Image (cartoon, rainbow, N blue to C red; front, side, top):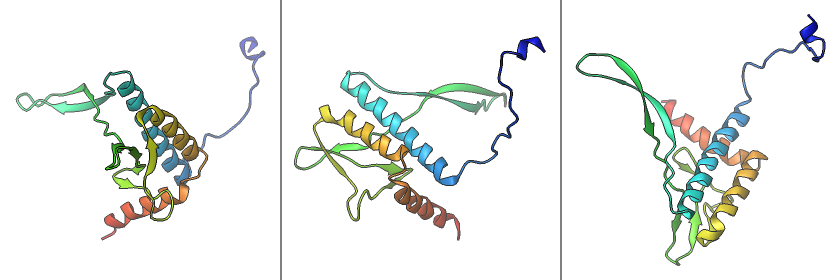
Length: 146
């Protein structure tokens, strides 16, 4: 017991479930993190392709093995007709309305893109887009309730 004498011991129960709003917020923050890494890689002239593990079955032998594959990350920004860069925030395949009937952010140029993405990620982590995320999530759930 002498090894634990210098440590502060407490009794606490680990939470089993996260609040759904926090889970959705965390999911979108993770997706925005990927967009930030994609923007950094493109600014440096490189390619961003995170690896993910996938289990595949060999058709000849029937053996299952785990392989690393590159995950495809689609960029959320595009060049508008005016020549300016626009950013749309997505939750899954849904484009979020950031304000009523406004679904894009006018970034301006690619030099400003990284800063805008970080501001949006901070806003998501602080819960400013929770209502929009909930609406998109409810629309996805409604498709399954047939």
